Amino acid sequence: MNHERIVILIKKLALESDKQALAILAPAELTPSQFKIIKFLFWQGDTHIRQVDIEKHFSMTNPTVTGLLKNLEEKGWIRREVNPKDSRSKIICLTDAALTRKEELYTYGEQIEEALIHDLTEEEREMLEKLLKKLVKQV
Image 1 (cartoon, one colour):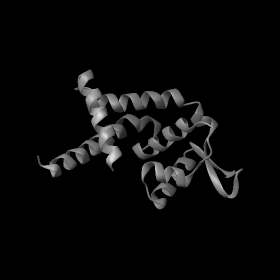
Image 2 (image 1 turned 60 degrees about the vertical axis):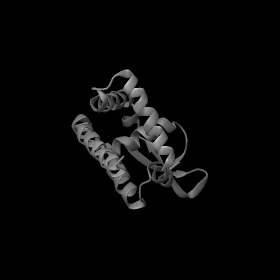
Image 3 (image 1 turned 90 degrees about the vertical axis):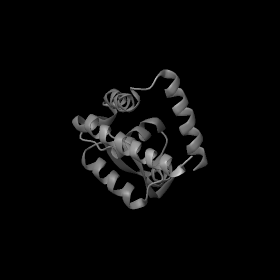
Image 4 (image 1 turned 180 degrees about the vertical axis):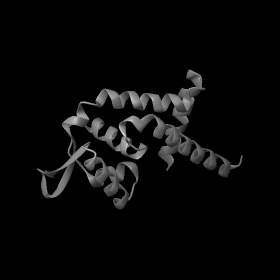
């Protein structure tokens, strides 16, 4: 088995996913990376999320996350507040405007996933998820 081929296929899949996500997210004026950060903040609920938490979760560099957060703040999706546990750092919070769009964002997420796996049977979807989780644990 040619492992390079698998790596190339995974990269192509990621690129195709981002391409489809860009089209789906166009009405919200979000990039796939911005969307992922907003979803992460929704999942965390009231947890105090710092920039470094986002960097670690997505394996992104500090400058990349800084730029994403700056754009999200300018678009009115997030705000930065002083961390009550450490006044030297800031926590990232969703704005009230972002919170009112939770269902819309959930729908976008469903559309992105469905666009990617629409040709798979339920059994294939389950197998793909299982295999991807197995591969991610090895990274």
